[in-house]
Length: 284
Image 1 (cartoon, rainbow, N blue to C red):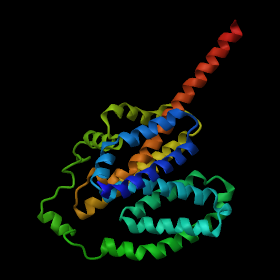
Image 2 (image 1 turned 30 degrees about the vertical axis):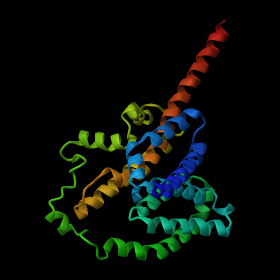
Image 3 (image 1 turned 180 degrees about the vertical axis):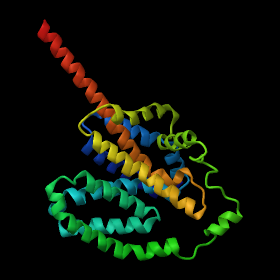
Image 4 (image 1 turned 60 degrees about the vertical axis):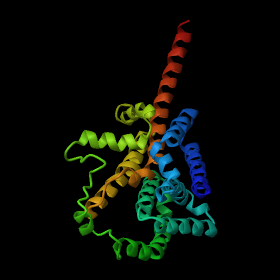
């Protein structure tokens, strides 16, 4: 049981960074509650944690990557050289830790830049940020490229073909049944049947105009849809299985998205009730 301790500690770190991100995005306890509930009750996350799999660490790294990417973009001028070096070092470790590290860093940095793109300060320091990221890639990419394109043990496409592996043995093929594919993807992102009703929150940005609507849509497309699409494309090229653990790190980001859209709905209803009560008082 003691072997689980490092993963448990890393998970606690992940909850801390999840709290920091919730604190930044949410105004009510509703957003906090929905987000933490999805992450805490996701059975796939719990299973990988108990099995001591490397994938259990990726959700924490994804949350840290988003937090530090936003810090780098939003507060670059205020960061000390030591802080910038620390963030750059974390990005290098992220890329080295797992092949998906480059996807995690790329998606979180893209969202962080687009989120603040209209602010003049970001455009002024963008060259400095790109210069720092260039150093990160120069240091990290040689080992990453070797791990991906170098020799592997039984991880060649011919091996998978010989073993008669079908990419969609575990998740339905979207070209055959798009509904089954979507149900499997989003069911695993929620990870607990009792919370499936929260998936209706994905329709809120479509029908409800609210202030942070475009940001939520961009968050969903860049930090949920894009990573899953990239990982699916990767396994299709190598002929490996497409399985839940490959997009496990997207779970807390998806939880943040659902927490945000449901909070927007709750705030809209509360404002509507407040307006109606004021009108009623004025009539009296």
